[in-house]
Image (cartoon, rainbow, N blue to C red; front, top):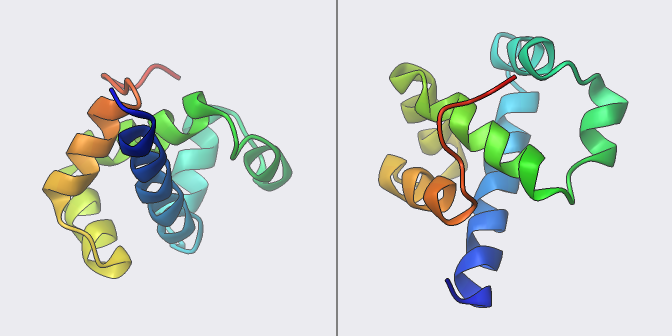
Length: 93
């Protein structure tokens, strides 16, 4: 995997995290599943594991995936490809 693809995947993940965090249902659910609080999430945004977890979280629930993709101006496939690039598999919380 090239560095450019990984960086592009990281940008996709950050865009998705912005949408997750801003959603009154998804934000609290993501934080609860990861055990993070808002400060912990902010502090971990540079960690690939956090980025991958956010994408894995979306891939596990298609309606959320589609909603976040639309709000972020992405295609669901772009999110799936970014998840693969970051090594996101089934979410493990």
